Image (cartoon, rainbow, N blue to C red):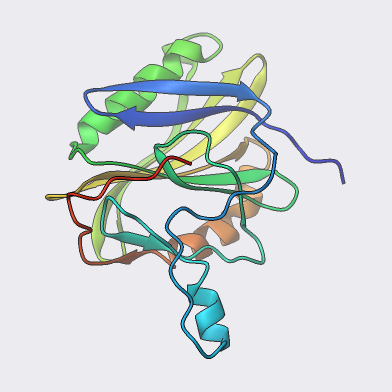
Length: 211
């Protein structure tokens, strides 16, 4: 099956502002390994192999363990991504985006929607919010925003989970696909969220390496 290249808008919240990175073909060179891959324990058990694929943030106290049978690591499209993955056919993507600045949910929401509106067909009024709610993931409060945005006539659907962590920073778990395919992958998305763990806060002196 030919790879399905999404004409994607990736929403990134940065400091006191935000921007959209648009690209018509996500980087598909040599696949990158997760930037914060946990070290594999000796012994070679299935549990060890599973833990080796986990992504432990160097900024916020969050760890995610994508199922390697479904999610394949891609080259992050900017240094703000601690991890970027797609399924085998390139029909659904997820990114783990972090920064070392705490932000309120209202601030993050405003930045996300404001910048989507700048590039969406029809402007801000054309961005369609489908769902919004507070959720608890791994015992921590997150805000969820699901929305459609059209770019050059192609409609994309985003599921965006975002939160802040006291003394550490903020994070987004961003999943996106076409509007017609998004619901098909709900089972895989839910399974991904079930792997999220809240860990001890990384040292505030650590910085993320460049991809």
